[in-house]
Amino acid sequence: MSTEYIMASAIITSAKHGAYVAIGLYLVMVLVFSLSPQSQQSFEAPIQVAHPGIQFEHHAQQAMADQADLVGVGGA
Image (tube, rainbow, N blue to C red):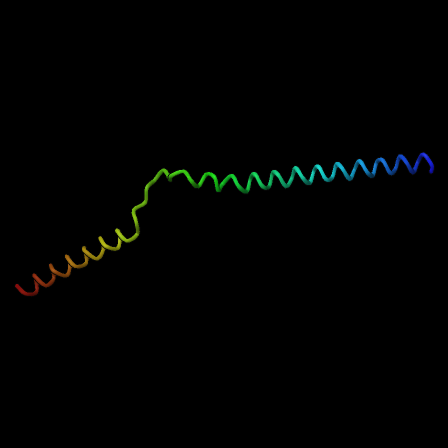
């Protein structure tokens, strides 16, 4: 075997190992960044939002009160 062939083979082998290391580091970074938002979801939101049913219940009570006022005015 010639010296040039051995050098070329060593360079190619080194490049392959470097590529595998780079791909591995990239996959680790993607994994870390994709999991980090999920770990932050356990914290409570700074603004507490009322349950949507409460809003609808309030609107229904307001509509019933308005209707009672209209009936009271019409019946008087």
